Image (cartoon, rainbow, N blue to C red; front, side, top):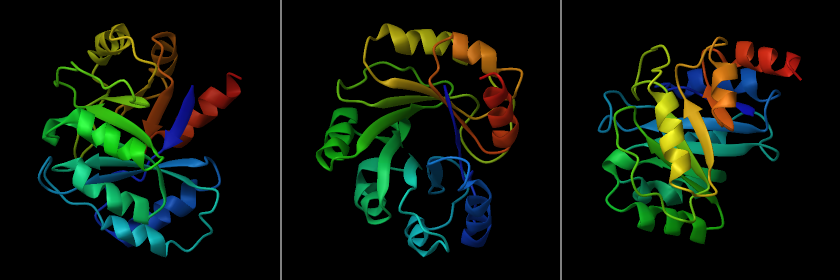
Length: 203
């Protein structure tokens, strides 16, 4: 299982840059959360500002999590900042197939994210990753919603080759159960260093 750090839902680019400098040496993959004040209240810093970070990003694999209206309209912005993987929330997506196809046609990895109460349903064949939110998407901290354990099974039963990831609410007490449930990626902001240390020590 891989533990991937996130920027979190930061409104200021200065705050985001500080966060990126804290985590850049610990993981090649870094998730950047993008919120447009439509899907959830609050707006994050402008995605294009990633081009201004004050360190060499040649070895960074940007994983862009789009919590926005019509994620398909943000693909070019993600390409501009050098994204390696683009993940869109399905709740404000008109067509999952179109989104996945358009991302894959750029040569990037493509994923879908599902909020805690969203029925998983159809997942396009070319999907590389499915994120199940571990708590309600949006600003603020909440504990892991344990119904996600059932949702992991549901996502697996659909039968795709995609990786399953959990985003939000994961603490050190949850990590083993998630791994046994077949989770391959855990995204974390607040608990990243604790989770990484625990998982590294477990070998």
